[in-house]
Amino acid sequence: MRSGRSPFKGRQFTAAVILWAVRWYLQFPISYRDLERMLADRGVVVDHTTLYRWIQAYAPELDRRLRPHLCLTTGSWRVDETYIRVKGRWMYLYRAVDARGQTIDFLLSAKRDAVAARRFFRKALKQAHTVNPRTLTVDKNAAYPSATKAMKKDGELWRFTTLRQVKYLNNIVEQDHRRIKRLVRLGLGFKSFHTARRTIAGYEILAMVRKGQVAAIPTNDMPAQATFIATLFGVAA
Image (cartoon, rainbow, N blue to C red; front, side):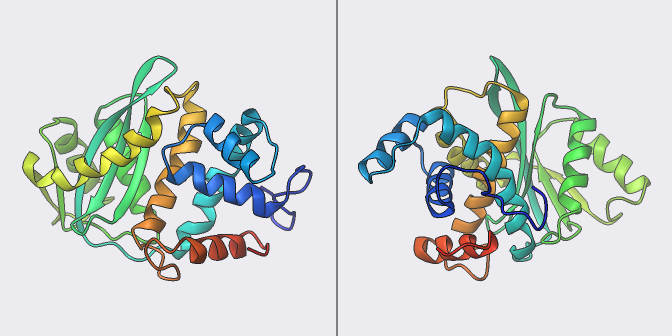
C-alpha cells in the first residue's frame, strides 16, 4: 500500500470495522461465513467474499507494520516444516521458533529441498528481531546439512553455528504447528499459493502478538492489541 495514502481509502466500511474483522479471523478458527454472521449480529452487514478481500489486503500489511516492533528472539532455533494444502496439492510451510517458543519466521514453499531451506534461513536472518543462531535444531531431513554447509561457506551463516538433527528437541515447534493447522482447517485449503502466503502471514504475525513478542502489547490483552494496531494504521481504535 502506498505511503501517505490511507490504506482504507475507497472502502465501504470504517477502518475500525475492517481491523476488528481482520484481527478476529486471523486469530480464531472461524470461517468467512461465521465471521459474516458475527458481524451481522453486531449490525454490520458484509458479505463473506468482502471479508476474504479484506484478509488478502490487510493480512500482509499487518505483517509489514508489526515486524519492526517485535522483540529480539534467542540464538537457539528449532526448525521444522508442516504441510498445507493449496489448490489440492500439499505445500510445505517452513517454521522456526526459539527455545522459549517465540516465533522466529516462516516461509511457504512448493518444494522441500536444500534450496527451499536456504531460502527460509535467508529470510529469517534478514529480520530485525532475529540473531545469527548458535544452534539449529532440525529433523533428519538431508536438505538441512546441505543448506547450512553452503551458507557457512558463503558467509551467510555464522561458521560456528551447530546443526543438531535431534527430532525430540523439536517438540516445541511441532506443537506450535497445531495452531496453524487449526486455523487453516476451516478454510478447507487455499485456492492459490498467493492466497495462502498472504493469509498465513496474518496468522503468524498475530500469533507473535499473542505470544507477547510485541513489547507494547501485554500477552492476550485484546483491547491493547486493538489500540496498538489501530495506531499503526493511523486510525482511532
